[in-house]
Length: 106
Image (cartoon, rainbow, N blue to C red; front, side, top):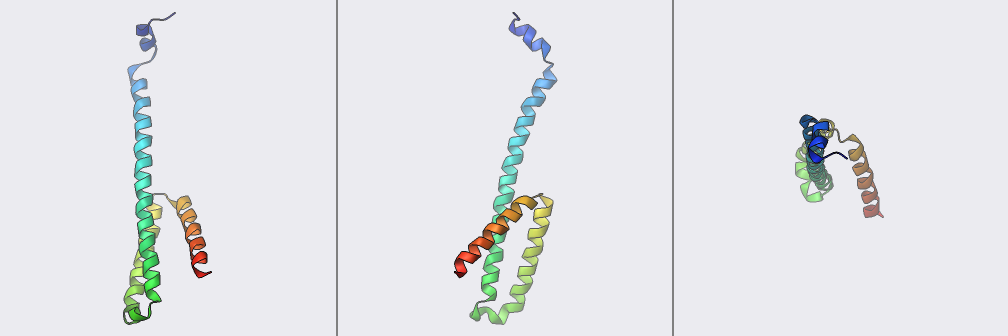
């Protein structure tokens, strides 16, 4: 039977420290990904608001401005998805958004 001191000698200190740091980094990465997804959802909300404003009769005088803002936010969303590698989750979000639009029109 090994004593505690010999167990620690079998495992170099760097390996133990590396394992601990690895799990910490994965947790931080998950946290940042969650924040990135939350921000993506806020961008999508702004996009949907702009789309609704395009069909609003009282805002027809500023329609060209709204179209420009909508194009800009679409570009930002695409760049954001690409930068943070959110492609799969963005597609799921789009599917959920499309389903939500179907429910609103029915």
